[in-house]
Length: 289
Image (tube, rainbow, N blue to C red):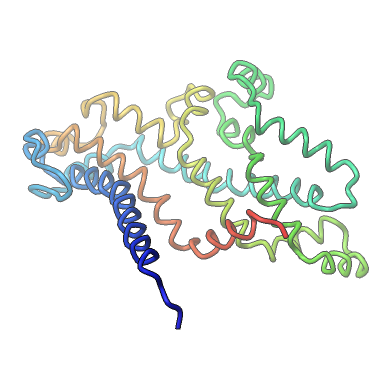
């Protein structure tokens, strides 16, 4: 039986207390937004809504769901998140694999160039001119291709690949497998934890895509959800094309909070299904023995 000293008990109590307060500080703002999105206009205007809906109503969500451009932006964000994440993982794995192999003689110069991009980022105007010259302005490719590889995620995946048994790679080469066959048939099936971890990182980044869309997308029909959310926040409910009867009984502030929840909940629902792989990937990919 392991004995726990009094000092360790006190530390554990304060540690749990601190983590509980920290967790509540992150949860309560979300509950406040949710409560406002489900409350009536009178309750919100009177300042009576805190962490529980007052005079509960779904009219704010009906007004948001009746907005056709909202659904279009939602679909664009889903498309960017799904396709962009697949591109990110494929490109990152394709570069991380050769950089993890000692037989690749140019790995150190390439790693140095990648490290430079991690420390120094290109200014906005050169980025814009590059996107323009590539013909990607006002296309969804401008939100997926420029950030196809994250330097930080590349180093995490490379560290994970370096921890895999080299005997498997040697045996595959003896059996006649090429490098691409080894990567897609051997390495990636063994790398589900790190792929899930980086997939979450990339997916959240795409879902929250905001600045890039403002810079490179001029067509309002191509706006992703976060840019559409900005329109709702800086304007009032009169800009919504929902049915008039819904707008009359809804709250401008409640509509904004409903849009925030619509933009937040989908990405939050993904994490529980990938939590196990996420934690394992962070632990294994962060150290190298």
